Length: 217
Image (tube, rainbow, N blue to C red; front, side, top):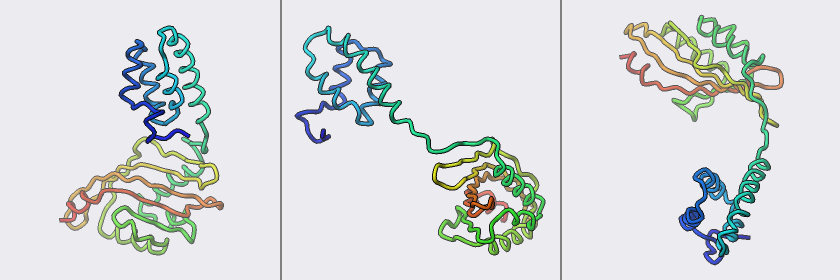
C-alpha cells in the first residue's frame, strides 16, 4: 500500500504538476488530475509518470488518464436517498408554520408527536418537550406580534436511505415588540424530523437573536 510518507514511491504535488506542464498537457486535464490527486486515486499513475523517458508516451497516457478519472468518479457515485420539492410532509411543515403565524398554537401543536423534542440554536444544550414548547409559544405571543413570515426559496424534503424523513425550510420573520414597538427581522431555518406515524418527532431551529435583543431595548 502506498504511503504519503514514502518518498521513494511518491512524487509531491508540485513536482507532479511541473511534469504535466513539461509535457504540454491542457489546463483542463491538469485541473482534473489535481482533483484526483487530492482524493488519493492517482498515486499509481504518479509512479508511471515518474518513469516516463520518451515524449511519445504522453499520447498513450492522455486517454488513459481521462478513462481512469472518469471511471473512478463513476464508481464513487452512490445515492443516499431522494430530495423532494413537493411532498405531504412539506405540506405539514407549511401548515404548521401558517398556524403558528396566526397564533393558533393548538393547531400548530397537532402536527407534532406527543413525544416530540425541540432544540434551538440560542441554547443548543437545552432539549425540551412539546409541553415546554407550547409554554414558550405563549410567552412569544405575549411579548411579540408576528407581522410577516416569508418563505426563503422553498422547503426541501430529504428522504435519506435508512434514516428519518427530514424537511428543512428557511423563513424570514418580522416581529414587533409589544412593549417597545420596535421591529425585528431575522432569518430562521427549521429541520423537522418525521416519525413513522407522519408526525414531527424532533425539530431543530437555528436563528440569530441579535435583532430580537435590539428590539427589546
